[in-house]
Image 1 (cartoon, helix red, strand yellow):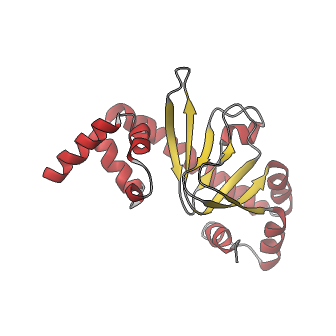
Image 2: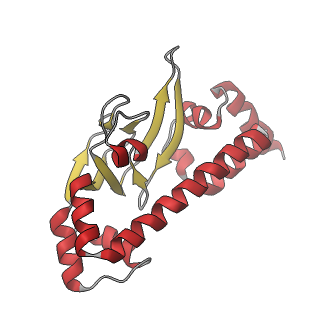
Length: 193
């Protein structure tokens, strides 16, 4: 069942009845994206909050010089969108692109509001998810200012176990804020330790 991963995830946080699960699944859509496709592009309004069933995405922005800056990856059981754009329905600061063929359960803004009205515990669930995302974002800022590139890489490997094999090294370097050559140097040093 394509919705089961989402239901399992939600039921770890709040308990839904069978009727609530049925209503929830009637309000979401399932979609497959190919590697390279975008969920949202910088400047467009983000229409969906997406739960990753399988695959991998990157969330990034492109600066005025055309340089890509990756701020997040999303893998199975993670969420992918430009949350600020989705909530405010204003142009996105970030693009979200699939780095693998990816399957999603997608929530539109209107459907989320319907779900909040019909199943109030889902409002609590999404509040918890957004709170965790906010805390993770703050902690990432602190790490970027206080940790060395090597320590940021070690934290990345802990946060995203086994993802090294799925994501090109230049993307990991962008996420860490280093060049791919510097990342290779860090990895070489770690092999010698």
